[in-house]
Image (cartoon, rainbow, N blue to C red; front, side):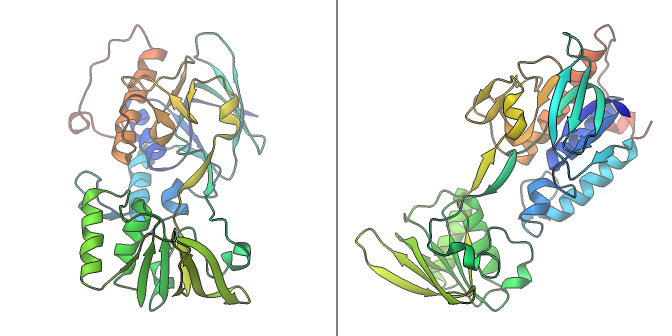
Length: 337
């Protein structure tokens, strides 16, 4: 059986969920497809307890709570979710980009008038450090994501990396763990300036130890349980750091999967879009969030939210070109009309 809708949204992360709301406000029905078994994307899979500080009107909100709120916001528009499956094929039914067949890995078929790709970084996995016997420790002591802060309460933690994830988790876990050491190959970090300032202050206060310039060189432990991390500097000087857990934050490996075969204009594994409409080079297909790119793009959730609104309005205009659209604020229009 082929299901029908106005818009298929590929990706149920925060930006995909907000796209449901924006499409609903534009009177567009949505089906949402995601490879994970639950909604939320990276927010749910990698850092549900991590606080996010740059969501408008929310001084601080955990990733998990943000997803819960976005789900509630989308609920009045009755989206249909297809989870734990990946879009494998898209087939145009005309040249105007107003009819498509979307097929998934579970055999789901949906006829849709347009497609929004909100797939984040696509299929993702961690960039693993090249350490001997790393896989031996991955189950118990080496974690690439923090799913529960309590796991690290009273433990000795070594964090490796120099970006926002490494710095943010060091600042969060310093009040929970027995010790936190941050290993980075340079003294300069690549995190937000305010976060780096807080990190340096925490070091000055003796709350965190910055192990720079060093790199990971080995792991020590028994039966998959870590007890020390070996690090080495450029001169070959080695140190052993007591550790119950190693958290390597070296970013995610990006794999577009079938999206790479859809004749979209790609630039360094990102989909090039028109900033004003979020439209791709193929009529009827739009891209929003981290997977989309244009000059001076900021990879922020709030940027993806704006792109979702632009895509929804552009789709409405594309599907109903003769309709005169009068933009209305949600305060006057209401929800669930």
